[in-house]
Image 1 (cartoon, helix red, strand yellow):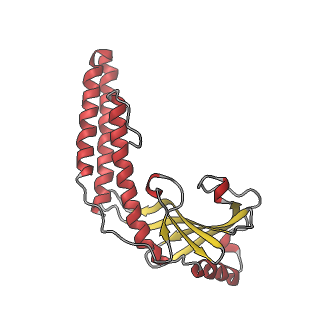
Image 2 (cartoon, rainbow, N blue to C red):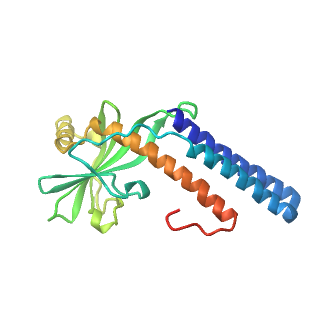
Image 3 (cartoon, rainbow, N blue to C red):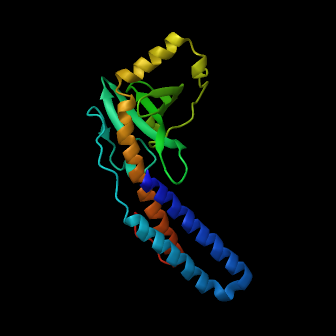
Amino acid sequence: AEQIGMWKRGLLGAVGAIHHTRSLATRGGATISSAVDSMILRSLKDHYMEVAKMNMPPKVSPPSSFTIVKGALDSEGPVLKRNHGDEEVSIYVMRLANVDDEHSGVMDQLFIHVDVSKPEQKESLNFLCALYEDALGIHSVSMRPKLQQSDGYILAPTEYAGPVFEELDEKMRDAFHNYIEERGVNDSLFKFLQAWLYVKEHRNLMRWYKTMGLFIDGKKPATGA
């Protein structure tokens, strides 16, 4: 929680510095352009070094039935996968919700997509869920194009997306919960996905400071920077 708060403060500090130097440039014109660049670069470097010193959260392994998708930290594709019979179950972490104020940085709720595909089907079954440390709630269920057709990205439904989940009969809602529970999708995923997102946020913030600084300094970033 403290680390997330520091990341947020670091980002806010860098953005504030950029706004400040833009204001100076407006007042002073092109003659202070070099000084403005130097101020931004110094601020970006200081924040980059601060973030680089942060300790990562303890390593957490996913449930044994799932494997971590190679390269997931650097993509928007699935994070976890597993097989269930002839089905492939993929877990995407889409965004965070209910993150406490910048001082605590508590990440107590995650939004995930659960994609269930079958080899003979052109579409896959997709669940949007809220995941907590001790619970999982389904927000919607729909049919969507299979992952192979979208390079790992979740696409919007091609046809009718289905009724509002909460308006379904209670027995049907329970049946859908049992369906994904049988495929290993439950609150046991929370600890791993929470830690994974901390690491991803750290990597993204480091990359943001670095690529911003290289651009302002007129240098070409290395491949993968």
